[in-house]
Amino acid sequence: MKGLLIVLSGPSGVGKGTVRKILMEDKSLNLAFSISMTTRKPRVGEVEGSDYFFVSKERFEEAIKNNELLEHATFVNNSYGTPKSYVEKLRNEGKNVLLEIETNGARSVMEQSINDPLFVSIFLLPPSFEELEKRIRGRRTEEESIVQERLGKAKKEIKLQNMYQYQVIDVTPEQAAVEISNIIKSKIKL
Ligand code: 5GP
Image (tube, rainbow, N blue to C red; front, side, top):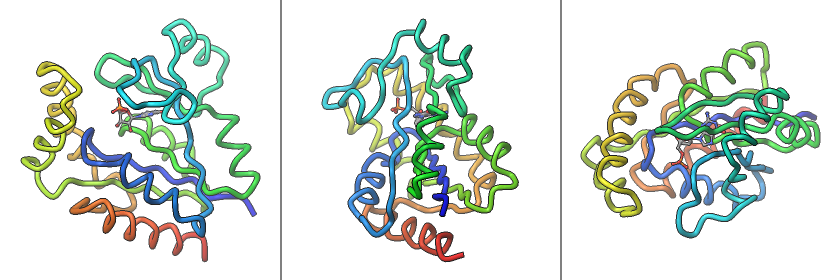
């Protein structure tokens, strides 16, 4: 049976990456993470081909032109996109594919998946905006102007939470992962 397509969004710094890692460890969910292409430079600790495919602007433009991307979007001056054939291949193998993407890309995937019963969208929220700011600053990898841009973007993204089928509050990543895995399990059983 074809796998589920799961879109997970949430403001920058909310902890999507940590939740994703916990979910990926639960083998019963049969998840595969869709590795995106980005023109952003790697952060310390990020691994090519595992966190992202880090590419040049030219390579990204070529991917758009060749229709290689399921969706793509610009986020704080960088481009991000989901490789289409990889997602399809994994779903056809029965894997439940997790897309961790921002709201514009998510909207595009939602529009394309309108008739797909094996589609689910989830928005991860911080317990409060103050807590989100603390988490973004706690990362200490970015300069102030970027932090401000990400916070501004986060405010706009949070307003779009109702576009998603489910909203999950990330009080702790462990608890958020349990809620998301319950959503996934309920969809798989259908
Ligand atoms: P970051 O730079 O923090 O890794 O990612 C910035 C934002 O881009 C996050 O909200 C992340 O979920 C999103 N993102 C990552 N990959 C993709 C993608 O392939 N497409 C879209 N639309 N957004 C992505």
